Length: 333
Ligand SMILES: NC(=O)c1ccc[n+]([C@@H]2O[C@H](COP(=O)([O-])OP(=O)(O)OC[C@H]3O[C@@H](n4cnc5c(N)ncnc54)[C@H](OP(=O)(O)O)[C@@H]3O)[C@@H](O)[C@H]2O)c1
Image (cartoon, rainbow, N blue to C red; front, top):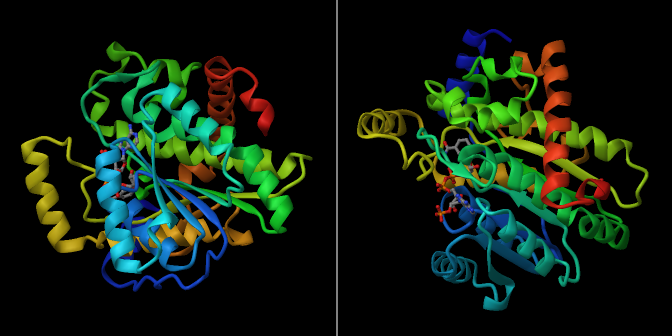
């Protein structure tokens, strides 16, 4: 697809497409939603609670904000307050991810992980051994997914229904030429402040491209695994949504954003519908990029031969990194 066709498709989605309100039940399911104190995560959690989940876990870095979100979900859905739990998760710290995953082992089941939290930063900062956008948007979510995988599989065997790991991705993966792809150590280079000079404006886009590439490889690995218990994974593009994600942009960027929001944006509730669509985990969504609540088409780079090679390189780099963070975790696949 050309960039022009892509732009037309984007405008059509933003201005014309009416996203379906989710109706598929989540009865008896235990669903974890990261970044669910505000924005699309909150609205997705609200839909999932309304649709009958037995437990919705709001995985958030501020318990206080999470409690306010839980209250609002209970008030709007009239579900019992015990249905919505607030658990601490800071994706900028591997230890927090590990502690969260350890706590989750005590749950009777995990049906769905909604890997939704995200950060958009144009300044270079580090969280753990990576630049912060990369740690939060990519590395920690994949660490969490791998740590929860045995429980998702166990649940799938018990229920006969595939587990689901859905990532909130972005159309912005189209918006970078990703020159870092030419490195023999892509993740290391992205963690290097000197090499990131002049590149931070696109870093969020790069993080969303890497997230999509590694999720596609994750899907392949899941399909090839002989372990019992099927797990579906997909990446959702919610479109452009009026939330707080770009709160770290500078003042000029905020003016531009305000205009764009007024002209084009979806509401957080509408964006939340796309996230729930991913969480439903339709078989046809495995390894796919979802657009307007159906299987869509990722960028031409992602689909290219080069994109395939970079995808494999990134996967290998990521697995080596995660083995260092949590030895043995890659064996969960
Ligand atoms: N809005 C858009 O147009 C758009 C478009 C495409 C994709 N997305 C993606 O949609 C997802 C949800 O974002 P949103 O638009 O709903 O924005 P949002 O309202 O800013 O929500 C982002 C969520 O991520 C959480 N978060 C950030 N850093 C975290 C960390 N270190 N540990 C745990 N949680 C963290 C935030 O928590 P705090 O409130 O504590 O910061 C918040 O709950 C993100 O992945 C974003 O990249 C957004």
